[in-house]
Amino acid sequence: MLTWIIIFLLLLILIDVVRLHKKIDRLNNHLNPQSSPPSDEEIEKMLTSKNSSYEK
Image 1 (cartoon, rainbow, N blue to C red):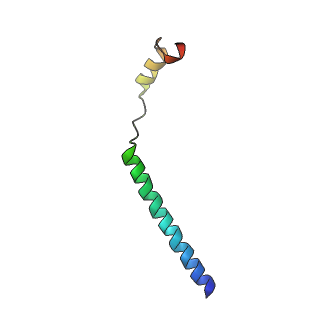
Image 2: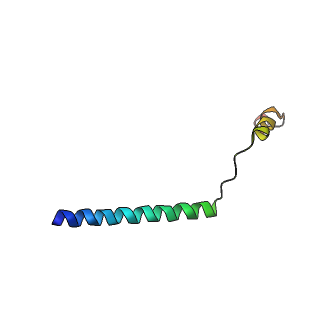
Image 3: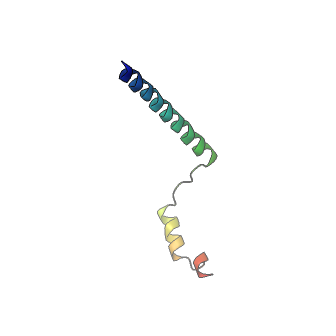
């Protein structure tokens, strides 16, 4: 009987952790929106441009 109670409590804790993790992810995405990755043309421009910050 005691093992069932422990298993049930662990299951509840796991469910709560998953819900909290989803909320944190949503908040993170809201506070720090991810920009879209650069397109192929933008990458090509970055690679062929002569004024890069590495040369300074």
